[in-house]
Image (cartoon, rainbow, N blue to C red; front, top):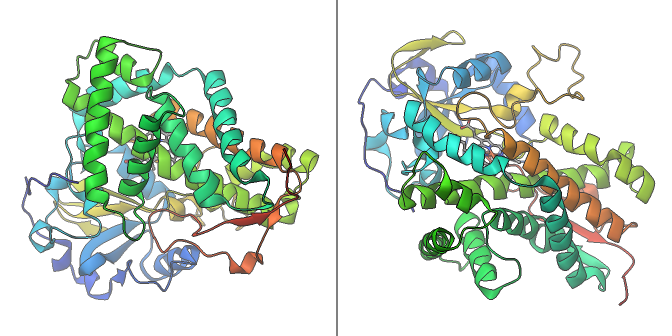
Length: 421
Ligand code: HEM
């Protein structure tokens, strides 16, 4: 799945730092249902930058403060994105669980400086060409098709039957795969397996098939361009190679799918469990925009993002950071930083949260707008079609996926009056 080509910089390690003697492991189960408590405790104990241990006891820094995350992401020459800079590679086994996110890949995600501007510029312009009205119409169509499958039964588990598939199909549609064909359905299933493998899946084989299918898509669009992201990337004057375009298309689809699906899920949970968003056709629909925004402040899918790597020795939040140290962006913690919410009333009408990150590598400008179109349409279509939708379990029985990185529910069971015909 990854092409780990080894360190390009060796340096002193975070483990050599005395602060890591009392570092907090991020991989245990203790805080996974209640990450806000983790952030509060870490902040109390360590301040804005906390020493933490990743899976297998590998040391890193979790940046918890809003000003500190903003500073790190705005200074991409000092806190860079190429993971080969890490001073811990000799401790990392090939099957390390975080390798799919940290192992270097030749995609836009790990490029730096002028090369990043070239690659990200192409993606930005290709995404800018997406017609938001057409995307909304397509999402409503995709949502309707998925709802048709369970509408007659009066019950559904929305994570597998709705939020994940609609986000995946919307992403695949944007890159120019036609809806509803067997070929597209196979790609959607392979993407699901490689991004979110279930028991018995082979994510590596699925990822190889995804690469092959996207490479074919690039060939097809070179021969017959259309009004889609792939064709616009191919026609861009920056002249990316086909291999670069394949890598970046996979990054776009993966970057779009998981966060958008979980954004939809976390918004539905809020609408279904919080009486301020009482769910009926009029009340519910009026509140969807507020619920989507509140989730980005308080329950963002992108809780923590790995990461950035220090290019030289420096200081951050009173900590001594050494060249090659890894910094995890604590986006959720930063959103709830007491420094920006002194009266503890977190949440605002504005979009100054860090859920889309910040700086050179932030979620590229039109993507948050497109994600909003997808999420809003998906939530509204469900509420319109099934206006008496309620949770099928007690809210206290809902559980979060055991991940410190991506916040979403394990399942979202609902019931409603069956729709006949
Ligand atoms: C249509 C949906 C979306 C698309 C096409 C998309 C695309 C992308 C791409 C291409 C990147 C890589 C940027 C780079 O390295 O230069 C990225 C990064 C990112 N995106 Fe998105 N995204 C989408 C939705 C979302 C959503 C819903 C969230 C969170 C609520 C999100 C949060 C992020 C974050 C945190 C990063 C990492 C930025 C960093 O390294 O600092 N994205 N996205």
